Image (cartoon, rainbow, N blue to C red; front, side, top):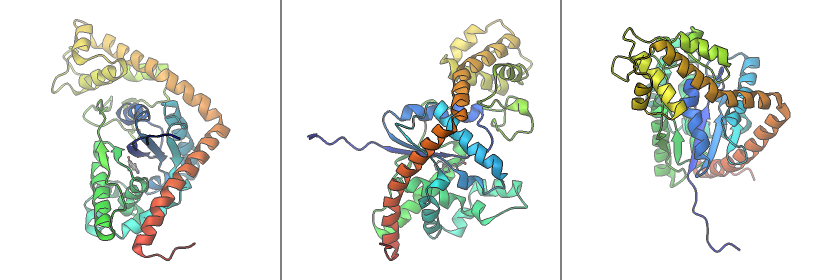
Length: 337
Ligand code: TRP
């Protein structure tokens, strides 16, 4: 028998919506940072299809996007043997806990969420109740697994803050039930901007396809989009205020090559933007090639994907059930067994 008990590793949870295909921004800003976390933490990553239907989705496309997302995550280095990888709708405890938590969260709190305000403006014809209670479902995702750390971008910090408030409120009323999650800010975070309007975040829903790179774009497409990237009229590769386009390209180049900004400035001193954009495009194409090829291989292997999401859901459901049982007991539900 082992004499020593291994210290409990931090639990990390993050969710990603299966809508469309991930961009270079999603990859460099989030997903790329997830794989290294597996070594020292218990990581749980979910494809949150229940969140996705808060805006109208085409059913066939949603199904396809969820499987693609799964294949992309594995291709990006998330190892189903090391982490739990599952599809949210496969684990009923998410919807179940979400209901309970929505009773511990105020109308006023939900109404203050900036994402709700943005999305209800953009979807004025479908301001459904799910769009409003979305943060209660997100809190359920996180709190079910006694999560310690949540890697999130800027736009999700307010939701995470609300999850913490709900957890604290519940613990205060009913005694210790949930771990209180902290935001996890990666050491090397990168905010990738649009290639066409570099003041805006890179988005897969941009009407201009030249504004974003997807993780599945081939080399020619990547080179072409970088060639068309917006810069400025100075012809100087330097990281400076006001040079949004160049700053963005330098950030991308830096993340994929590991070179610092000064090194990049030296490399392109006296050269034009044409050379620079070609180099960035080539570096991105080289960096993404193995991910794309691995994705294609995995996406063709539906039996393997099924095995992964089944095992992931089984494992997740087991952990989630423990927290849900505790919550049901604390709120006063009669035990079913
Ligand atoms: N709301 C997140 C987004 O749109 C996705 C998400 C759902 C999530 N549940 C989560 C992120 C739990 C972190 C933790 O990006």
